[in-house]
Image 1 (cartoon, one colour):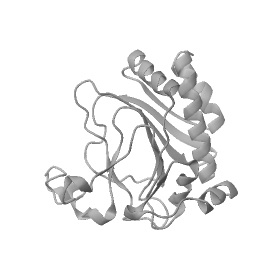
Image 2: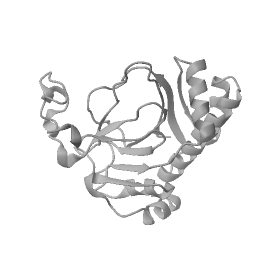
Image 3: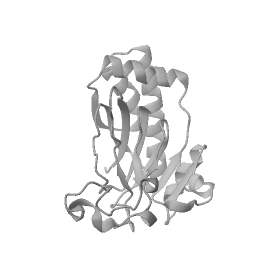
Length: 226
């Protein structure tokens, strides 16, 4: 843990039930370093400018897919180039670059793996775990990620353990109220199976089902080793 991440973690809010730390301050993300936490959420509210930018970009780029590996300082110009240097692209690029910088500093990374996607259907509709150390996710527009606390989950029902049954019939969880929901604008760190000491404890999560004209604009950030 570098000095910045240590400082953030040391002033994170108290642990909450369900293996989650959440709060309205950036420092909430430092809670991911707690051993009994596998999701940390910065519950931020998007500005009107950023919300309008996300709407416009979804209209202009309905099939948007940006994928790159870069140092944090290269993120802003790369996003702007992809989005044609519009006023909307500037607002979005600034926010993505800001989050990439936070993510890289928190984990001591020189490079990050970035994906920005416009979605009109669930990308990963079944509950699952990621075999990564820790992934950042945030939804700029549309319905956000769903997750399950360990205490409400039977992990043997993940993957082939579901025997082909839907999540709500497989025995993975008991009732609909067990499912937790991120909100649009939330910045979440999802601890995965490859986090040291977290094997068998990666956050169980899935993409939301989308219906009608609902669309998502989703950002994910991942570790990239040198």
